[in-house]
Image (cartoon, rainbow, N blue to C red; front, side, top):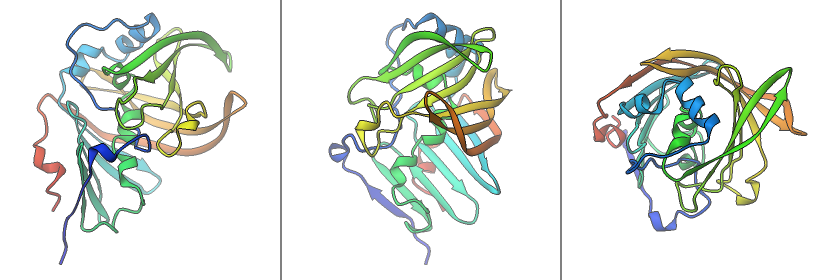
Length: 252
């Protein structure tokens, strides 16, 4: 008989070795960002517009594989579905897997909570409370000048607060072109060991600029190295309503 596996997590035991999800906290006052970051947010449709939405859904396509993501934008609960293989629901304190825990192919499912969503939703998610923005010197690459912003996080924010991001914005259009990122889920010493993602195609949905294609690269000697993967996105939709809470727990 098929069953749903509910894995209850004790929050106090979740220390630095956690996934790179950053929990959204509603803002109580107006935040002031570095100029480059402000221009980047505006070029992508504006933070005010982003904050009007309660639900985001999109398909992540890698080769022949397609994974549906449904996210509650207010608390960042997420549901992922790969047809014929698995459904998985994430909340802040639980993971639900259907039809059983062996159907999800990765040994550490918590790592994947909001992993693709976070890259998909840049730069907006790095305006969250608890994220810190620092203007860096502009940098030229392949004949194009980029304005850059470094993102770090206050201690205890999310589940991998030592992660770092560097956002590369085209100096003319203010559109995000590339992201350097580190992954400290497994080892906090990796905080400045970067990889890179290039946003190769953008689209427009719900008044926001959203990625439709991204390419992952190794980052070698402070420049792009070999390609690691390609991903594309379709079925992108925003809603002002939030999803029903039980879709993250009841997966049949």
